[in-house]
Length: 367
Ligand SMILES: Cc1ncc(COP(=O)(O)O)c(C=O)c1O
Image 1 (spheres, rainbow, N blue to C red):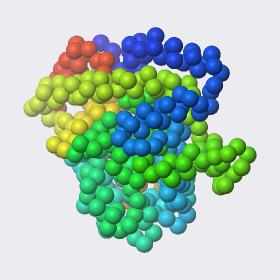
Image 2 (spheres, rainbow, N blue to C red):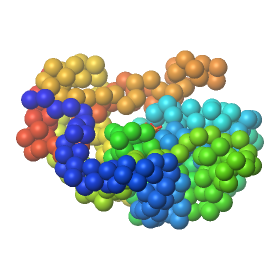
Image 3 (tube, protein in one colour):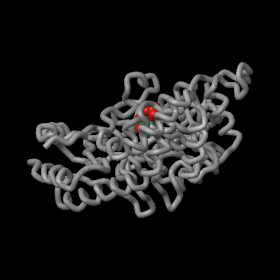
Image 4 (cartoon, helix red, strand yellow):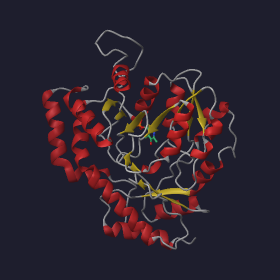
């Protein structure tokens, strides 16, 4: 049996008629940049996330960059970020001219460890950027409490966790401003690059809407230097159709995860840990093996099962961040996770037979 890590064709097939019609309408209208579909999507995503405003942008990376810019974070500033995440989390901080300051993760959830944050705060710290990794929220209450006490901002990197909740609050709604990615492989994915900034702060939303069109809300009038980071109408049209199915897809992911949790009981792999206050969305179903990460990945691949390591090199050990002076051993929890985790297929369209095959193969691995 061959089972890819993600099968986007299966999802497309299930909504083809609707999506094709919505995309066709945009092409027919020849209304491509920003436009009505984008405005509607901004309202719908904001409502879905439980916030007042959304600003569609070209990617999740741009959403982070523009969120930082809207908060006036730049040269000389520091932003606290976990090193066990996709590169863009720290890259966005660097792009605006600020310095990423890495804080290690909680090995149980893979999210930033709030207990380690305070000692990294300096007079230059402007914000904390928790990343809701693999689809479940970071422990936000202590993070928000530290930020409040220190008078600094919080930016949620919600690229992977749309629809997740923390103590009943939606991901993306708990901080000053949040970034979403609609990269095709995300739980809500476009047919290309797309992203959104969401916030309850009208001024921040308006600032992002100005920055995304060259720093001028009125054409040819520029109040500041921005960039071209517009969400296009074709992507918005497709995303609006997909949004209607998102909760159903997230539930299917949770059911798939529950199936694996059950089948892998007693097998020497660590299944995802979900604190009682979290509802996970399983953007990834990530397992952990003490020894033999490379071997089990090869074994699963030989058996036709797609896997991936998210992420093999923690950001503090990336060549481009050598100048920050971190060493091997600086972030032990992130470094251990990078050598022990692997993700397996959890997409909503997996059949019972496919899931049973995957669980069966993992169980049969010679640990
Ligand atoms: C945690 C995280 N942050 C940021 C991004 C950047 O999003 P995009 O690929 O849409 O630029 C991604 C997605 O790839 C991500 O997983």
